[in-house]
Image 1 (cartoon, rainbow, N blue to C red):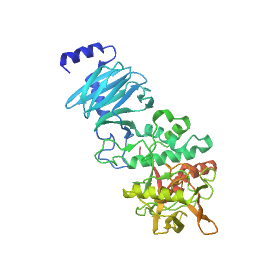
Image 2: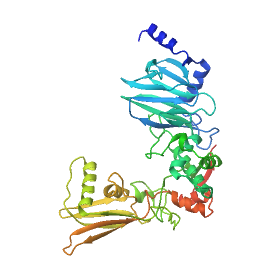
Image 3: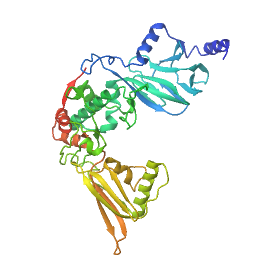
Image 4: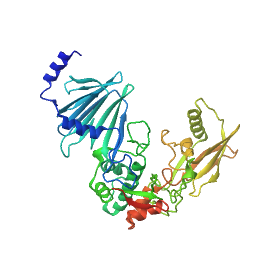
Length: 428
């Protein structure tokens, strides 16, 4: 675009977009710098401020619509150039040739060929929106090939406000200690995973690949209260933050991490007896029934995906549990066909078997028994997997934590029950 055309375009947009002074640019730089304020060159016990976390919200599509509750700043970066505008109307960000462009709600270009765009709300209580979803903090847009990466840069405590509700569900006042335990576990997980993606501009993803994060739309008074009352508190083991794994329902006992995944033994992730604390969960017991043909198809599908080619295993003649973990989960499952024997281990068994009700879902838990019904000739009629629990079974059982909270346990007691020999410490 020629410069005179650009100037005319900007004059036409004066009622919607105004340039902002150098002071605001400096504020933007504090928000959008690559390092996380309060973390650089400091030990985990020396924080004096709430840290930031960078959350990857979206990585796909070549066009995004952003807005805010009120006026917001638009910082446009290209090489050594910085231009900052503000608007009270939605704008669109598009990716073309690995460069970003910003367009007004009328479709007119504001800036083009950009390396980065930051959306910063102005004023207290003002939230930025990605599409229709509101978020605290700012939105950082970066080109990534032909798509746009949208990253929410937000204070850790505000990040948790969008994590704890979808992780623990809507709870009552009697269950607030479980919500506090979830807040501390989620904070510990996030803090211990800052900068886990080396070389990437984000610390965590908003999906279950890390922790499910839904922004401000899921916030509620009880979870915000639990987060505020445990602010800065994390779980420590020998002066190091733990990796605070948690899952929905243990089915009566959690497990050692090395028995669930191919990981080294960890002192605080041990099998813990939990009785009937999570018995109220709908997944405390469950059942999946397969025909021989259905189970054979599931196993062939898994092997084809795992090995990168079509796979045929032949009719199944037997399914046997060979070994179990301390928590009662299947360590090794043997599937015998008329031509071969297949061995599947640990939590991977859940992916191998899956469910009859939904082929896209994995088996709820590896804490299971196998029962085979046969006809008079010995042919398999059905294969039944009867199990307890939902999830991998390592660390805190969320439904168990809720059960313990109903019985008067404090969040400290809940956490030290599920994580062996740990302490709760306040970092900031």
